[in-house]
Image (cartoon, rainbow, N blue to C red; front, side, top):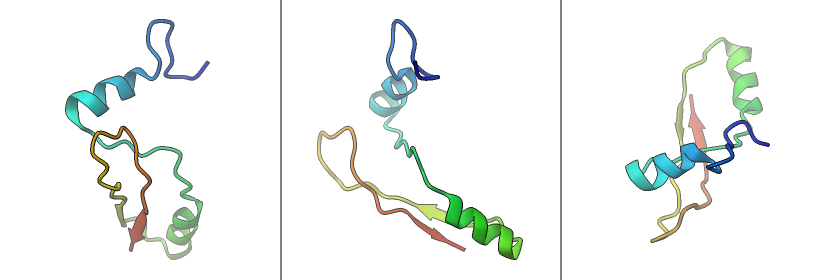
Length: 69
C-alpha cells in the first residue's frame, strides 16, 4: 500500500489537485546531481523549470527539467 492510498481513494491528492485546480505535479525527481553541486559550492538557490508538453486532454506528459544556478 502506498502512503497516499486509502481504501476509498487511490492517489487522493492527484484526484484533487490535477482536475480541480489544474496543478502540475512533478514526481520521482532525481535531484542527486543538483544536491551535490549545491553542497560543493555552498549555494542552495536555483531556478527549476519543467514545462510539460501541451497535450490536450492528457493527464500526464513528459517534461525536460532544467535547473539553473
